Amino acid sequence: MNLLETYQQGFGQRINPSKSLLILPSSFCMSAVQVMEEIIDIKHKELSLPYMGCILYKGRRQICQYKYQYLTEKIHNRLADLKHKLLSLGGRLILIKHVLSSIPIHALFLMDPPKGVLYSMGRIVEDFFWGVSDHGKKRHWASWASLCAPTDENKLGLRSLQDIVEAFTLKL
Image (cartoon, rainbow, N blue to C red):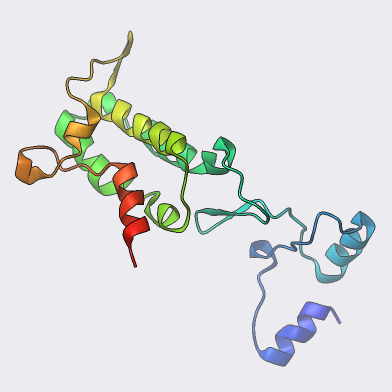
């Protein structure tokens, strides 16, 4: 009987091997890792992996663009699916406010991404809002910071990612 089958019968819990990973230190012997994979029928993976939208890693945090690349790719892929040429400026505004703003929020709560990453994510959203023509990006008629002001000030009420991260750091 398999080790995990014994566990499942003893505790009455089910383990889904397709959702499970074996995470071991990098100094672990590869032959031992292969034996463990065969015994418990779960694949081995390094500790730099996404879990619930956040990258898990061990050790001193290095501020690198690639650790947050999945967030920018997620926003970029979501926008690539949408046909911005078919949407009015108001339609793009609604998409940014309600769909795209919620993508990285939980990840921004847990991590403190560098300003360069927040800037690149904001640039993707900003370029989507203003649109792209056949000749490149369209003219940006107002600064993004002025558009991110509240609607009480006759602005669009968009939320800046830098402001969101700052609000999370102030949370007690």
